[in-house]
Image (cartoon, rainbow, N blue to C red):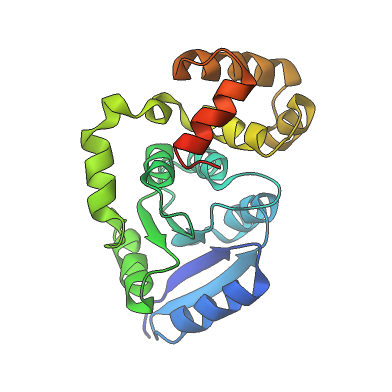
Length: 211
């Protein structure tokens, strides 16, 4: 009997999930054993099903994908995570990989790129989709000149939520930390980025393409 690689798909758009579920299930050695539309569901599915690979979108309604990656790796240091996302900016790829993802593929990639990436991640090999690999390599070389690269994955997630207009209390609830911790991180983020106010922080985020 053919041993199948077991996958869980995490994406808050059901139609999108259906599309790449059909693509992946067309391969006889791949099996979709679970789906999730939120980070909370993803954590539950991961714990219950222990998939070989978790295919993850970064844009989730309750918690960002970068924070989810960090939590999954805390639960299982051997978790194999492939990010499948619309974000083409090297910054998002850098943060996802720093958090522990093995692969990063954009949704603008050809279908065969996603399929090949699933096999690579299942084999515990790192993979980046060709459409962003040159930009990512350049960004890594120029990291000292990229201020957002100084942020830890959780700080990056807090910044993303702050820029979305979330309060410290809301962010704390989503990330299971106190509002005071969020406020302290907010201060540290501004310090690391060399800005003095939230207006300057927003301008920097706009300039760097985070908004």
